[in-house]
Structures are given as structure tokens and as C-alpha cells.
Length: 117
Image (cartoon, rainbow, N blue to C red; front, side):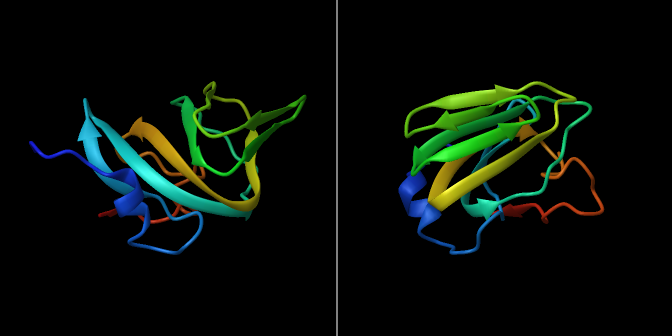
């Protein structure tokens, strides 16, 4: 791969919410974009941290003891094993980085399929 990736162009290719799309790979990690709106399920990842960066919109990451609100250009890492629930009142665009194959709900049985664009 020797071409730059335009994240806005990749995000324009789909409309589904909570369905991450892999745009490239980096050291055994998936670099993904996703559109979100409403609330996601409470979940945790036992074996990996969870990285969120807001590209557009506003994301609240609900933790059991606090809420973390992210604006465009801000990121937050949920430590492994910590229960959390992402929530967005309006459509929000995110950049996600996680080890390849990590289920987005922390459970393969309920996770969104891994899609690439």
C-alpha cells in the first residue's frame, strides 16, 4: 500500500451505523472508520484496550463511574476489562484502532462482521 487514505471519502461509501469498516492495517491492527448514532451495547474487551477518536460529531463514552465526552480531534482509550457504552446523540464519525479480528462487542457471537473498504 503506497497511497494515502482519505477518511472522509471512505466514510461516504456507507451509511450504516455501528458497522466499522477497515481502511488499512498497521502492525497487526485494523485501522477502521465507523458512523455511530444512538447507544451501543454495554460491553468490555478482556484482552485489549479500546481506542476511539472523533472525526466529526460528538461521542459520549459511558463508564460505570463517569462519562467521557469527546469532540472532533479528541481521543480516549478505554482500558482492557473496563465496561463501557459509546453513545452519540447525532451521527458521529470515528476512527478506531484495534488488534485485527477483535469483536466490537467483546464477544464474537454478537459482534458486527469485519468489513473492509
